[in-house]
Structures are given as structure tokens and as C-alpha cells.
Amino acid sequence: MPIQYYIALSVCLFCIGIVGVLTRRNVIIIFMCIELMLNSVNLLLVAFSKMYNAPAFAANPASTVGIDGQLFVFFIMVVAAAEVSVGLAIIVMMYRNTHSIDVNFLNRLKN
Amino acid sequence: MGVTSILFWSLSALALISAIMVLATKNPVHSVLWLIVVFFAISGHYILLNAQFLAIVNLIVYAGAIMVLFLFVIMLMNLNTATEPKKNLWMKLAGIISGGSLFLILISVVRSSVDMSQKSALVKDGNIGLIDTLGKVLFNEYTIPFEISSILFLSAMVGAVVIGKKN
Image (cartoon, rainbow over all chains, first blue to last red):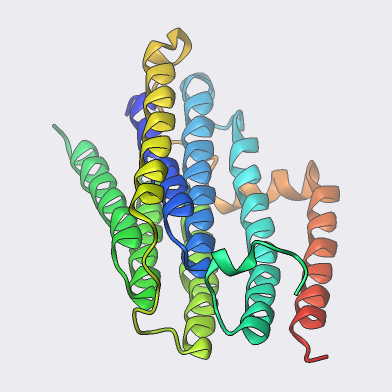
């Protein structure tokens, strides 16, 4: 599969995520769009790792060239899980204080 | 057109349509369910690229844990009705235009790149996505980042408890 198809798919998903962050007001939807952007980057990293593995695999089937991309995806998933737990705690605390999840209410840090 | 390309195109169409539906639906619960469909499609792409470990981890961590956490928070706030206020139409249009121009720029960069034009990703073959290969590299060369990420998890857990606690 040509790598450009994967890049185009990831760019599409990333831009859908950006449009979601820019157009929606619900803070949970914005958070989900950030997850979508992280996932598109993960897909691109896996595709690139397989792209660099392709010539090395043809020469030696046991080579591990390009495995770093998949390990980066693993670490990105770890960081995303930590980010979601803290972010949802912040959202719940914010909802408890303001009884709203509209981001336009949050344009000042005080009060 | 082989089985691989049919799978690639159908999974891509599924991912894109569900990603658009995440934004298009008004109900947050439906958004979460569509996002789970996106994650399943991306896991299908991982399986197609023979990255089996990441496919399973993606399903377990994202579709299983994180999305359940989102659903739980939405249900906790009782937001499962469409309560989102209308945003200004011009702001919406500006968001779509800026996202679309970023999309155009990135696509044109990719199309004009000489480096990428002849390369192709190895599908349904290769063994770097298997769990034994990944595990050997993870515990031999990436031991310190692995341990640091466990400390990150611990601090995130403590932080979530401290933030979520009633003061």
C-alpha cells in the first residue's frame, strides 16, 4: 500500500479533529477530538514504521528496523491514558463549580 | 484490486465517516459511540499492517478504558440530552475554513514530496508488530522510558484523585 494513502488518511483524521476543536463548544467533545488527533498520529507512526521495515524485511526477515515507531505509539498511548484521567478529573471539577461544560464560560481563570 | 486494497479502502471510509459523525451528532453519547467506531477502524488498519500488539492495545486501552471513562463522565453529568448552545455561525465557518486550509496545505506538501512518492508500507507481512519482537526491544533498549512512564502513571493517578476530591 503506498505510504501516501496512509499520510492522506491521517491528515484527513487530524484535520477533522482540528475542525472539531475549533467549532464545538462542549468541552468533552473537544477532548474527544484531541483523542482523535492523537490516534491519527499513531496510525501514521505505525505506517512509517512499516515503510522503513519493508526493504530491511526483504533482505533479512528477522530485522527489527523501524520498530521504534511502534514503540513510540505504545508510549503515546501511555501518555494519552494519563492525560485522559487528569483531564476528565479537571472537567468534572469544573462542572461541579460552574454547572456548565461550555468552554466559553471559561474565558477567565478567576471565578 | 486485491483483498488488501478493498480492506484498506473500506476501513478508511469507515474511519472518515465515523470521524465526521463524531462532530455532526448533537448528542454527546452518540459522539462517544462514533469515536469507538473510529478506534475499531484504526485497529483494523493496525491488523492490516500486521501490528497485532498495537491493534489489541488500541482496542483495550482506547475503546475499552478511555471511552468507558468518557461515557461514565457524560452519564455522571447527565448530559445525554442535546444541551449544547448554538455557536455563532461565523465562528463555525471560520473553524471549518481554517481546518480545511490546513488540510489543503498538508495534502499539497505530501503530494509534492519526492521522498514519499515511491515508498510503500509493508502490509500483511513483516514481524516487527508481533509481541515477542516488541517486548524484546522494549525491555532491552527502552527500559528507562518504560520505568519513567510508570512514574508518569503514578503521578497521573495521584493528580486525578487530588483534583477530583471534594475540598
